[in-house]
Figure 1 (cartoon, helix red, strand yellow):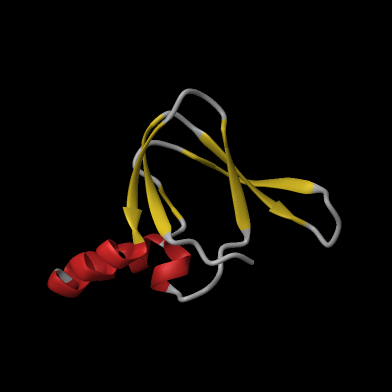
Figure 2 (cartoon, rainbow, N blue to C red):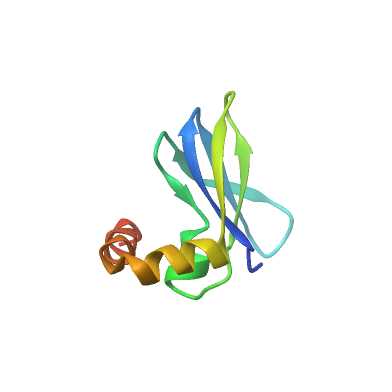
Length: 88
């Protein structure tokens, strides 16, 4: 897996998230929709991301650096809890 340096919130559009098997074959594991977060597991679970994303339609994304998101969550622990619940 890869450690991302940013997380993304999908403002509009749709993304397809892919995972790779042991070879080069990609499998669609999720279709993201408005208000979904991409890459949260990197920060919240301290795990590398195992997916790649590709736009399924025209998209707008909000990019937040991991450092900035960690600082925001330190100031607002309720946000950290909310994001952790999204990953369950």
